[in-house]
Image (cartoon, rainbow, N blue to C red):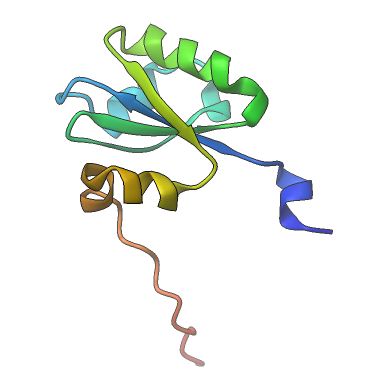
Length: 104
């Protein structure tokens, strides 16, 4: 059984938002609780994760929270979005280390 069959597929939506918007303020203001996860928000762009069948709902929730938000594109991977939009790549959170944990 693959991981995707357990948790389901995901889509990443890119929005233009006001430069003053932060990830924390968007998390607090977007209705929908855990269904819509704000991955990144910086320099007027935000990435929100949702299920493929909830794209319209997610777009509506983000627009309700930030009325000036506009959907730019939808992708299945963060890598594609960050390659396409340099501002998202520059402001990406650091990747966790993949080095093995030291043995005690």
